[in-house]
Length: 264
Ligand code: ZN
Image 1 (cartoon, rainbow, N blue to C red):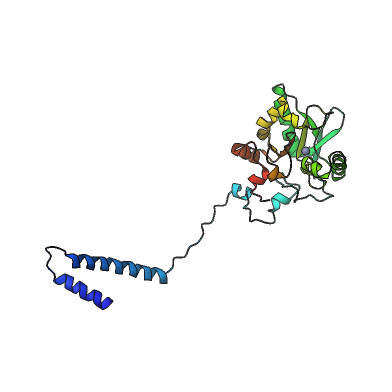
Image 2 (image 1 turned 90 degrees about the horizontal axis):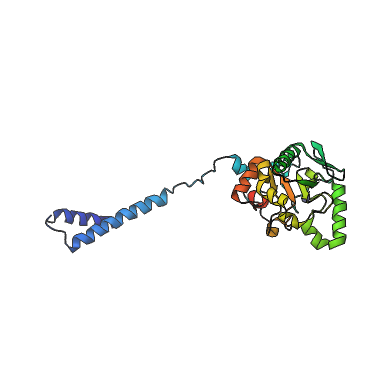
């Protein structure tokens, strides 16, 4: 092949420069083919090392672990963290009690509402902001101990049966309330939580403003397949202003499962 190629080049050089005939075209095509062949052979023996681009480390990246990450990163499993992730498969230890429970509120029945200090401070700011717009936010529940949650759950099971109850109330050990970061609101503190809360002025105000105070609607409408729970317009969860605002910017109905990219 190469000998032949050399002969062709030699012949080409001897040809007249007036015009390139059919033979000349064939020779040029052959020459081009050989150049490509040469490149291919070189590439075969000198494969380029492909190194995957390493993502730039950022806070956002650590906040949104890829679905492959199992088990969850430690800041998502630490029940004392405001970022903790709790769902039907990620429980809290039965004996866990938040290390910094604050008890600044009483509801109208005189019950003490406790929350983690940071969540309590932000709830207070949120209630004041709502009050300035003549919206009264009534807190129905905050921190709930494992035992109390167990009682609530059993009550609901006896009313609805296990299957239906598990859609509207967390099993003991699987509740954000045990971490002191969840708040249930109600129209008034003597009425039970209800889906109709979404239609109240307070419910609408929360939906539009809770993220400004670090709270998110934890179980949005039509997201049961992701969260495992029915729409709970009364249940807001504290996660800090930074993440709450980021989530709201994406969508007011974004779930924590989507934000943390946790596959079910
Ligand atoms: Zn709740």
